[in-house]
Image 1 (tube, rainbow, N blue to C red):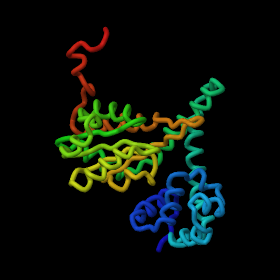
Image 2 (image 1 turned 120 degrees about the horizontal axis):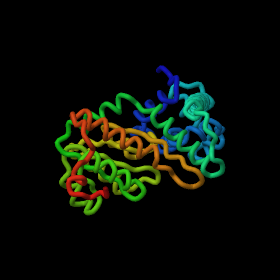
Image 3 (image 1 turned 90 degrees about the vertical axis):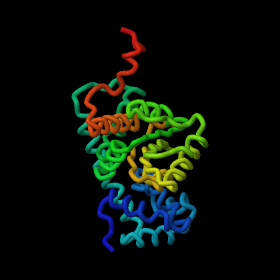
Image 4 (image 1 turned 180 degrees about the vertical axis):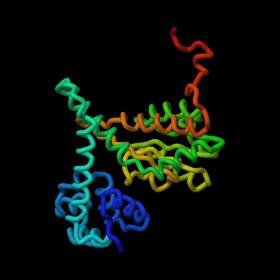
Length: 272
């Protein structure tokens, strides 16, 4: 077999194999997919410890991908990180003085998240997601807990039905397309709804954070956003930006070039 020549090719290969991997190999794959930054500098002993397998299992995992060993996986991750860092530096080279402290740290992280999100966006998946949503008779959006604001934003801009108030009854009535939004730690009800939808002929578009996300298994099109934050908090900035661009692209595909929603203006909801 031809070994992957980039981290993108590696993720595609691993995603295609996830359903068939044994438990230990699956944990290694999830580690590589969910944490390329750590994988780039994490030795085989630490990788084995985190995946709860022997070092020989990690080596065999790399060999099964056509690679000479685990260091080759590390190198693919390092090259990808270097490319992302270079892109982030270009985006940051605007001549403005950073504000310093937490503000600077947050600004740098959000710029990195946005750059990585849009640089690694798979064009085929993007076009498929847009087509599914633009051509659907009905669109439903589900996002719970931290992902709920993103779901609210997307459902409003897509003129779609937002789920979550009575999920069991709502899922039974699904048709058309379900947009499932969730990031680590993934909402179990969102994953179960995506699984149910997929098994019952409803198309699923997933907005999530990495290829190891359980939503990816049930999605007909999956879009990834970087969610790394400063400190112990996840950031939803890139996910929100991705949702907004998706909604706008769908509107253009539908031939709607006007405001996203003129109903509030008609009812005088806004001041001025």
